[in-house]
Length: 387
Image (cartoon, rainbow, N blue to C red; front, side, top):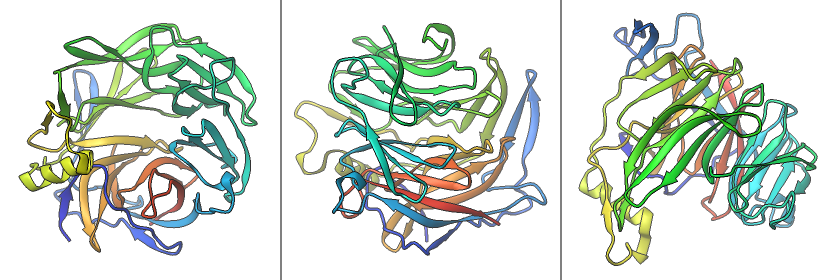
């Protein structure tokens, strides 16, 4: 099987509930992790292949144990359009359905418990849900872009409070630390440029400091295949882990509560050239039979970005979704790189491309499937079995 790099849409595969997906990767003695101090900051240099420390697990398998969304006899057990998944301390699953403008709640066995949410512009109502997160004290928070507010819900669906986002209408991603501070990727748009800023906000959403920023040139009637974007997670110690993804840099930053960088995580990788045939495939996945709108230009870089995004588990391990793929039985599976809490590259695994890894809690991986092979949205869960 050969490695490939392809876009984000594509044909997924439905796994049987007993299938184990092995992530074992062979590595040589040359694969070593080197930690250097540069300008007073520890930098973890990781090799191309996983190099787990002696005595630690070297691989893991994924065992499918739950699917939600297949029961077409019960509307409460189906989704119209999935946008986000969250999991609480009791392993209850919260799924944000943006088309129905509802959060559907299931217990750890997949049994439907309740739903909440109402479309509208009034108190507690949602006009355009963009993203859902969970605070460390188990409150669900939905960013309603249509009403420019954060809505905080208790687990039973009661509205706890609302916070207006004011001028920060384009809040792309956000996370909460244990003290209630909010870290957010905010955007502003001008005629010729986009400015993205990674901000820290007070619990009342007042801006406190800017941690990083970048600008992207905007060109009229140009559609870009890849654009830089912030991704961020919070550790158990309230450290901010962040990066500018969709670029040619495989570099992840760790910052403290004052926004100061305290560590960098870097992995050696080789960028893959985007050939003409792959470019055509990307074009078809983006525009299909309808093609690009008249007068527009399609712009694709010469190489794929280093990686797409990352998530974090409750042991502060990072799971980095890359653009590397492997063809399996006529389908494409996506590679994920796994780093431990120290930033060491310890494992690598492949997973069906339709199944977006979204959460890892209590040794289980939760995936969001926006459209399965049968054309329906699903939530899927796997047990992580470390070896």
